[in-house]
Image (cartoon, rainbow, N blue to C red; front, side, top):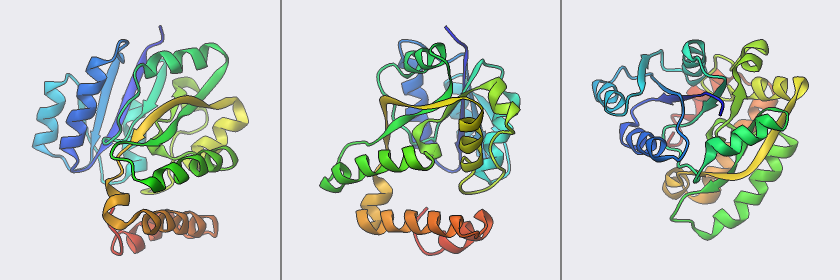
Length: 229
């Protein structure tokens, strides 16, 4: 079995983080190490990490930089990047191990909304799967990658948004970066709070502006003030 380093950026999301760390502890195959990169320097986050034997690392509040900081300290064969509010499938480490054994250098999990799933979820999930195949899967889909490959291609961009885009594009150029059939469950609270179609349009507008050359820093400052993060 490969050694997995789990890297989790966190920023004032301790309740969700505690649930994720509890899930990781209950997996049939457990990760070798867990690194939580806290952009809030929160004492409660540090206590949760100690409770679940995770390494607590303080970083500046920028998700790309948080991921880079965690990856720089990780020692496992494979790096697995999770958002703090992720919910896991039954045996994700076995799924990733099989993919690596079959020649993949990395990949990502299938996007699925966690319960409660409103009817728009059943329309959006296959559209997101299509977008991932012709475009780029985002960081909430549990991107994983051999550590050597990650560092070879330069890691995440030090950006607050779209930090995984250059990483995934480079990974596809140097090896097999594949989708797994196993799901990772995405917390639907932002879609429920903002409206399913309003949140979806907000996300697409961000991506379109990014494709048109607007910097991630400008997008972050422009849109966080208009809609919940």
